[in-house]
Length: 364
Image (cartoon, rainbow, N blue to C red; front, side, top):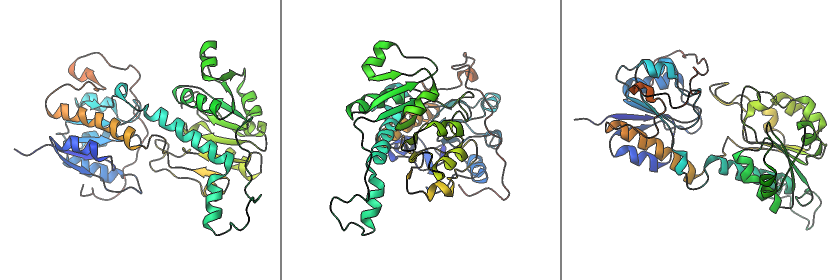
């Protein structure tokens, strides 16, 4: 009897693939330099029994409907918008996700916090600029003033939001000799503020005014879309740096670019961008940002460690393995397909409208 077939929408750590291979034949989309297209996704879904998708691979209705024998979907990431849950319910397709409770290394929040600290240090000491300078053969003078940095001791970090990611960062900032101010929707208890070494500021505007390093650390919600715009950059010191490892759409990207071009702020470090999925199927980093030497750019890389990505995708693979074995996974996102109550009342949403491109399905 042939094994069931699993299709993975982009390359993933082998530890997760190996789990799937114990019960299934597995095909992994091979490209690292682009998103899978809708045509390729449709072609794969029509030929496979199970699908495994990462954060940005929204699975629309037409993908869920193309194969009457589709038996299950695994997703790495958030609840709303990744899968058309209405169609999954209609077709009785189980959706499994990650088991974050068992994450041994702190998970994506910890990883993203560490990346944020790394970005701040790079800005403070101009590490990437110094690397490019030295690679270009320009190092001819010891103790040169060509790459003077602002350093960390005595400087101020301003945090917009302070959730799990911020709580990982704050003690590190304190250890680096940085003062940390924050503003968020609801203030932390004073005992927790003292433990983290952070100080509450009454308004977000004051965070921008006082920060030498402004860190975006809030979630993307309907209330925070385009929360940060031109008037906030106008409040910042011309010597200050802006860091966003949260979500690109929290910031009006055009306003950030203008602030950098006009010298309203000294530089920036970005791991996220305005046009990322689901806003657009493929990410597009503006060329103006790519051309700025005082801007650090990384490709939404906050959770990209072998430990975290491997562990989380391993738990998604465990869910698919359980489905193949006829078991009910502990990571099931839509238990109501079996007549049980909804796990999360807020998981539903059709996600973005994704057009189907011209041409026939790919071979995957």
